[in-house]
Length: 319
Image 1 (cartoon, one colour):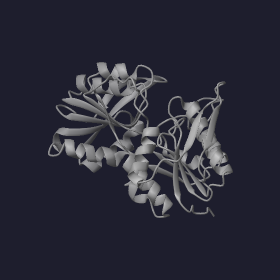
Image 2 (cartoon, rainbow, N blue to C red; image 1 turned 180 degrees about the horizontal axis):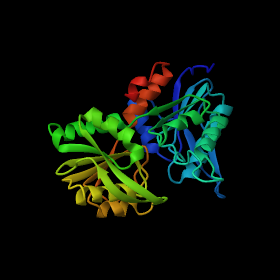
Image 3 (cartoon, rainbow, N blue to C red; image 1 turned 60 degrees about the vertical axis):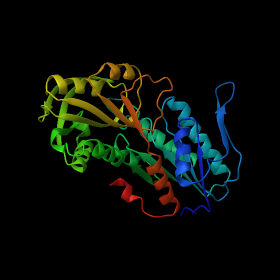
Image 4 (spheres, one colour; image 1 turned 45 degrees about the vertical axis):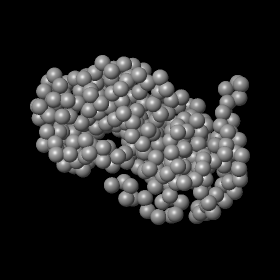
């Protein structure tokens, strides 16, 4: 049985420190005093400058780019806390890297998501708090409790305010068949219809749109997915919705704005009016695209952390 910590402490690596600070602000506590950095040869180090003995500790670290550095930072912070006799350690991973490598797609492939789950567990984490896993079955890769929060309520609130009274003229669209369940739930919450973009992926990070299942003629389209990586899928889908489907406008919503490679340029040149993401991953410092809007997950994570600390249900946050 996991011992309940006598007090709550939050520490953070370098991947998304602003989010960690916002979570602390929501909770009314200060961020833990620690230093996480690199030695001159590139090895990561961690120094905890306050006692954590018996404490209920939360480590906020998204494993986004640079993925391996951020993953290693989280592992050594957890290890340092475990060796310092922390009462309980929760790995707060707003974005879980390697989530797309959740199965073997061809012979001799690794299942990297399972490997990362093993690393986090063996480092000393007692539970994991994350958001919108690419594949929900990844929760089963862990031998410790996993709370997978949903970013949908944040988007529902945003869209309800923006499209109030225009539900009949607005439709939710899944950018591929794999995201239908996620998009359907989003559409039901908004009281809107659902359409699907049927695409055939030729190779990694590229896709070819085949057809549109549903009527989007003259409607405002809300593309809904879990992440935007190179933005090829959403930009191709948006173009097809406008040119083939006859949509009036297209907006995209995704929990994780990875924005790798040519993503920003593609979005700037696309027909998409707005791309709304959550701050599970920080936006690039040199971002030059006024189409991208970011909403905060700090209040939701703060409430989840408070509930975990108080040993009460977090299930209301999954609705």
